[in-house]
Length: 424
Image (tube, rainbow, N blue to C red; front, side):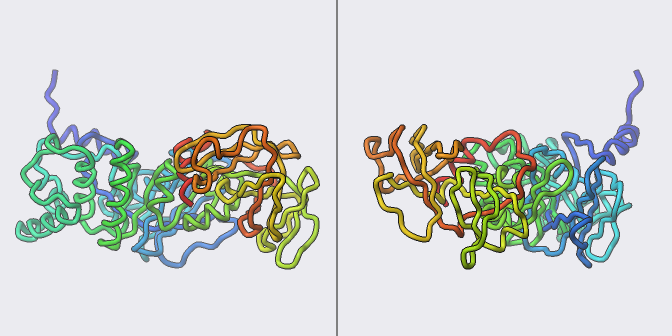
């Protein structure tokens, strides 16, 4: 058996690296950037920044433009490979089949990863097990030939930033919890990239530690002022950390915006069901009422929606989030100016911070309601199964999506639904 020299091993691995394959000892750091995803047919490209085109068979082109350096953008979708491919194209690990990639004014489409002002933090961190924490963080600078005095200063600065001072002599096997993520982040940031790509860096952590690291990542990003592109399939994580979110499905983006806008005003059925839980009811435009448009539902109930959301459509689906709805006993009077439906409680689940109700309306639809346990805090005071109730909400809390369209599968997790419903 022949002996494989390090040079021969590296030569064999270069094509695989260029295809984006990962190795346990990977040497690339990662950087993050703010991105805007735009479909060719409807939106123009930014005149300055990073632009990426991703074209899949039968799908419109999705473009990515990086315009700022001080935000976190999350790219997420049901199929994780769609947002992953966008990040990999920005980093240079995936071939661009159409369009160009610009970093600032520089076209980097044909540049290899090591010549781009980007860095990546992978889910497996890719720390060198035989090197100390100091040398792991310093690795990129040593490859660039930076002087020892500057390396020492910058490594010290990075370890302070990620709150790991005093860990310089330890090996990766001697740290635990969220510490490997911090080391990987320090190694990526020390190269001062223009864009930092994070590929599900918290996916291996338990829930409590993941939430702690979300806060830490946000703090670090705000301190360094670099744009982060954060790939995740966790909707709650995207909502918690991001300044902007791009939701993708089947290779193209569904909607781009800040978390509040995507949650409160989803543009498609897919986005409405992907971020949190939505109640969608089909209806048809039936007139106007001042600053609102009137939509008539299947049971002939009229509800009002903001006029600006209708956009000339006739057949629509109106939506309302579960935590926006208030329940009123059928015998009580409902205040004026509110949208109202009537129904019967099918199921009630006490979840601590809130109670989840499943209500069957007169039109046969099932509506989910989250009611915070403020006025009703013990089992005997909750609404009971079979009780007749009115469901009321403000017309301004109603959103509109085009009728039909895809729904995300699988449905949002119970934990995600509980958080969305209980804290807003």
